[in-house]
Image (cartoon, rainbow, N blue to C red; front, side, top):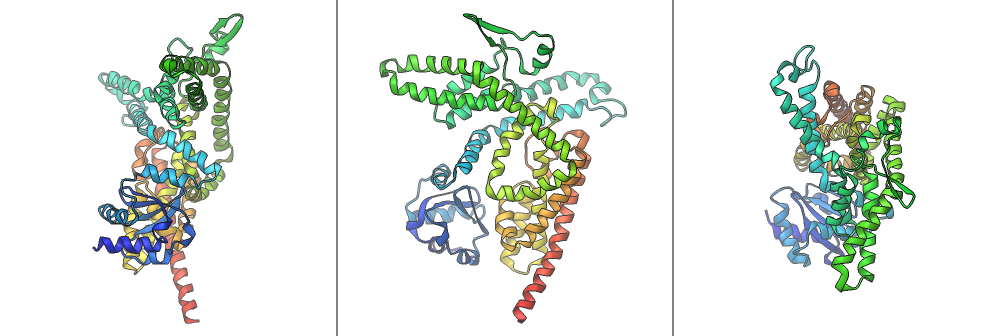
Length: 479
């Protein structure tokens, strides 16, 4: 493979060196921030055998070359453009300048929550293992595993402790990540999170009992009472508090003399933000978070399979806009308050959509005679079934249109089915075939059936639409 030539042809198709604002690469894609995407010669890129697909999202134009190829193409491309040494963060930063306010808000949420996803995934999956050990009748008739084998009881208790840690101390994780994103000292953000879950406070999960008994503890300061309530498992309060903390810290650093900066700035930052958190910000955003959770539950319970069908139909278009990243914050709240919510239905919807996109792409693989498209579709289809849909979505389905329509129909039908049976996830993870380990055991069978429905319907509709599309093109050529 002639990598220098591929790099030159790619650069020409992109509009030349002058159109490149930033460039980097990940495992499979060349990631670019362009000054003007409208001058890209898309037909030329599509005609290149080395290019497996292209798409634009979040202010970035991305070209799929595949693992093992992209790094070699980038090495030549960087020499031609002078972009060597840039990282994907540089590209994100350059691309963000072209985003509208809503896109920048979604990106902000993504930047905060993506780094802490591994901790949430680990906790959720451990919770799933605990559920398997304690579920009645799942493996033994009329008994759970720990009832059938009492010597496993402490193992289940240990796993449950491990599982709860990430959610009980969630404000610490979010405080660190959010404060860093807002430009403040992340360790002060983590300290703020610790304040919000301090053991001296009433545990957030016990508020209902305390209210019923009228036993809410308070600090009484000069006749003013501040409720001593923790924020375990919350999202919005620590997000708002972290934003305030970062702004307070940055403001103080501008006015505090440098000789006292290391002494006074952290002290005043924590004290001021802490007071605001427990008196104003925390109570207001806790209410807002509860309303958000209650609203999502009401929507899910009220609209039923009709709402599920609509959500399944719209999920892939939402992915195209990048708005799906905002769901991470909502899912985190649903999982953190799992005792009330029962888990996340968004993960289940995402899975039905993803496997539908994969099935539609594999249908294209079965139908097409174009070798390049066949190679792209086979790899992209399998990737989508495993939960990574960008190659399938942007590299195949949107370009041909009919497989995208087939995938939407498959996703809609399957989501209506799993919504009817109230299938929910108890952890984040790969929203595809591997996602089975993230599902509550009560809905496991329905989840699998839902995936089968999604795959079969999307594949069949795409095959049908593909055949019709071929006939239409044949008629147009004959005319």
